[in-house]
Length: 93
Image (cartoon, rainbow, N blue to C red):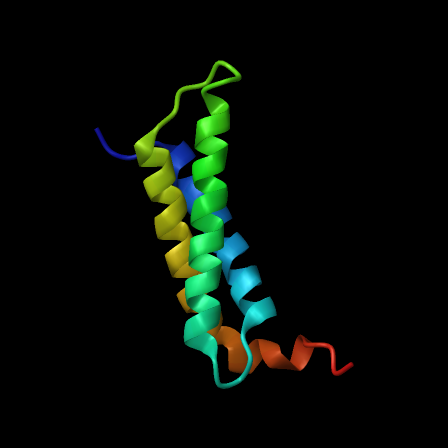
């Protein structure tokens, strides 16, 4: 049995989250720090969501958290590759 559509949705959501955080944090010469911080932040957020789900009648799943972490890593790394193209949208203030 393969991953459900739910895992794909979670991976995509955390990809977008970490990508946006990385893009917001990344200075031109310190992208490694931004990538690490965004992956850690998104992973902690995903872990917190999984823990909270146990209190509201949903199942806590390590596989959901793994999907969150995978998405965060992909999104953060993708943001560094897209940064030169996306820089034109940054505020110059």
